[in-house]
Image (cartoon, rainbow over all chains, first blue to last red; front, side, top):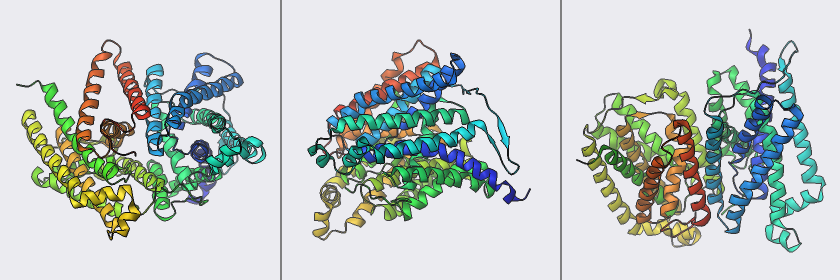
Length: 293
Length: 285
């Protein structure tokens, strides 16, 4: 088969992977933009969401809608607990961004071990109703259509919140200048909590979609947040639209790269993209300026 | 005769002290938060493994692994130390992920995830090897004491405290920063080589986040910019880890591993929240 014939399929695959990466990247970037630290434990929330959905659907046989709602609730609760016991304490003690970064990696490993303790190390598969559509040049499954559709819906939801609501305005003010925001009466802690809740919703849905696309294993939060991290750096760290663009870019690059390289080299492609961006355009595609110290 | 268990622990602890000391030189003394330090440690391990497996004797492979790692560190530093603040951290953290990818996928060289088994030992007797590692460690400790109290060491610390002022005094801060990373990565490479010849095996898990977090925790628990802190930090966290081994002794092995990891991470979180400067730390990260 000539190589170009499989191009439509590769683009579709790239969009599917890219949507999940973009969900990981946007949660990571949103926290970086507002709360100002590199939020690696977002990967853990995605892993928790995937496992909760698995437990509700396959072990407790709940219906899908209820399972999805419960998964989102669990993700929000865990995120708020993390904020209450860890990140809130770090902020209270004025921890440096580096300490917060390290702590978020430690939390990521903690939650991976927790999942290992609860569910064991064997890989799990969420068995879910699926259907394949054949378009001639490419095929796509129902789950994959819903991956792309839910990503688009979530991004529209985020855009609406950030740009069109009073809360979004307060969030942007806080992100731009914390002191001035406080002077005009914005309570940072309250905004931080809402921001964490939004990131938890993204993590929950991203995690469920990830769980439907691949196997579940306790450390699954680590590779996905590394992709999310690459996506947000490539897009421009601290810019949520950039994170979405970066995530999609990485997904497409990895899958279209299959034309030239064996599939095992997917990670090599994303890291090469990361390396090139870090060296030649560290401010990313959308070119936001990040904190200089 | 000392128990085999203690010999093995002391060998690994001594190697960790070398890693943490070299890590402290850039992060603590020079103020460059190089989150890619373990990539250099792993590079040194791979370099030494590949050299000895292709027939190079260890007394050439050991220094050569350090020198090659130092050269790599100098090249990467020359490109990256101009980056400011978060960018430098991001690039260096990216190095770890790049190292994982290369070691997993350059199969003709590294055998990918299978790793490289059968790396020759330097000294067959474990007790003698422990003494050998400790001798190198002693030399490192003396060197780092001398370096950090020398003029160069003072300039490193001046750069950390106020780079602009140091530049005004006529010091080429760029060169000093590259020098700091070169020295630090040289020792990381030596430590990697000592480590790989001890466990006689290397695979991509050497770049795992868990291992990186362990070393970072030892650095922070001991305290930045303190040589005494680095030594005590490694010892206290190693003793803690060893004692955790005995706590959950009567549950299933899979669960034990997970519980130990959770307990250790919990302790790290408490240290990071309540004592981010560690025991002897003089500066913040």
